[in-house]
Length: 247
Image (tube, rainbow, N blue to C red):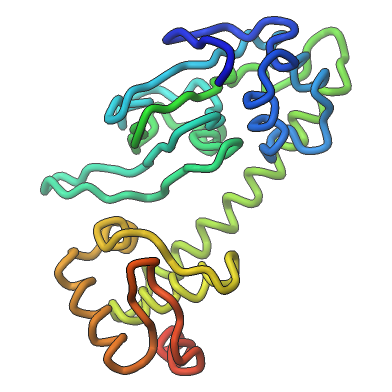
């Protein structure tokens, strides 16, 4: 970003207008849907939101941390997951698009800790909005504050829908069925584009081992269900893949 960001920087008036990349990231976020630049800036300065910079591998929050902020990705990428008692690391989601929200669900479920971790997957910058600002409007009766709260409810509803899809995948009876569902849903969201996650990322996403993922992908390719190449995984025989997803 053009504006120098220290480890933690409080948003100040005019900062968005002087930083086009920051402005673009926030305008693309569902949290600020149908809000103007001045509306967004009003919310962020009123709430004393901060931009925090992280290095690759640096934790954004730990599993035992108390939820206190809404996180908006500005630059870089973040993985969210949990570590199991037997030492396995399960990746629940990866956020890599400017404007992506994460951590907001935990603010509204009345839990004392996140129960998950978030970690910077590369050099990353995150907008952090104090949760108190999202629970009620301020005494000034600002219209943009009410809009922000309304947008927050919409985001939560969409996250609930995503979690239902994830539950459906995890309830699959076979590894092939899990992989088929992941590929078909990705294609629904990104028609014609190859699935580019690594085998390790796919394994973490569906709670499987990398060797088992590799074997099943080879089997599926041999049967013509998919095509695996340098660009990623593409759907081959769609009807057969859909049948595998419905087994």
